[in-house]
Image (cartoon, rainbow, N blue to C red):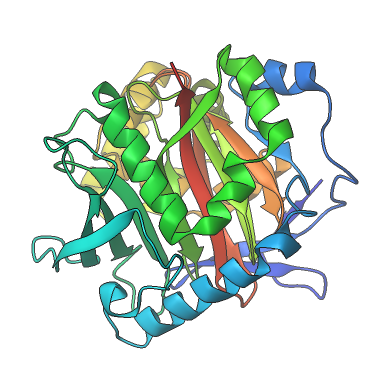
Length: 362
């Protein structure tokens, strides 16, 4: 089991995110091999538990070395100030997707560029799939990047209602990031997910992440209509995760708050916030309800910025460390049961990762 420490030791790594020190982690013994029991994987998934598949892609990584190297150069060029469209890797001499236009997305301060592509196999009335490249935060020392693939208007499109366009955007991801096949062409992973979904899996609404030192993601879920969950694959670098289904997360919040007196004073400087937090955590249903709101700052102060709560979650067995070749399955059944998760970059390497939503192909 992994262990959390308030102070650094010779055997620990820091948990840093956007300039905030959240303790240190001592990495425990990693699983020695892949989970090969399909029933165990299905049981964990259907009970809303994150499923770690250690080393699942390790043997395939050397076959993708050239693609990963090209991607690394592309990202390096972007970090040096070039627009993504100006330094696209030449993946295919006869591409299915042709870059047609670009937007700097002035309304989105984290965006670098959105690239629109013509799909040569699409019907004339189909929309264009796009790839949006953006920073993960506004923090000066966080160089983390996200390449998101979709179509239509962000925040307004019901993407699950248009599987043909979802498939086009997914194929665009495969064209720009051929290492996508490490997930999409993995026979064993497809078989496991096929059992879970009772159908062939379709990998849609894809994101390619580059978690940099001092970066990562705050506690969140990935529920979207029509999607069963997320498949996350670590291709380079290392990441630290905390995962828990919403009911478990709420229980851990309540348990932690009962064990710590004067918690509101430790979290907040102003009297109004202290009073609101104290009232909130006296009611388990109120905590569960607030998690569903876009603005749940009272809980973010605990979940994302309070080191002892990170230690509490580690001690409760909710921590995972992902190395290159590891896969993590995150079931997202619905808002009431979805697996919440938070991510930290471990070490000094900006790592590449694939994060693909999964749905039944039919």
